[in-house]
Image (cartoon, rainbow, N blue to C red; front, top):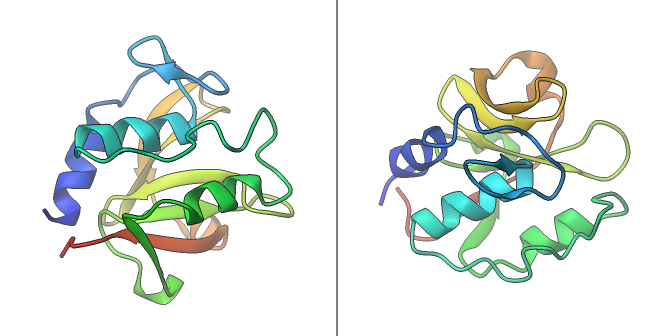
Length: 137
């Protein structure tokens, strides 16, 4: 599989409404729900998908991502299409997006749905960690 496969899977959820802890497309997804659905579409089983509870702060979301056996961390300077971006707005990382080349795909609460938009500098600055799927080129 390639990074383009991850992006293609993520794009199938564009427009799905945002809801915190949403895991039921087409009804609603949150950023972690988008990650879970993309993994399922790729035939991967997410461990402890609700592991961050209702509050993704205090490192809980990061710990959940770190437990996934099919992901490995890469330097942020090496991020590329298909990578999983763990982002912070304030404090510990609390948001997940999929790198889509010059853009990113994520369930964005402020817009109210899953969107794709340019990976602008303001978003790049929020990237705390980058994870790549094992075996992906």
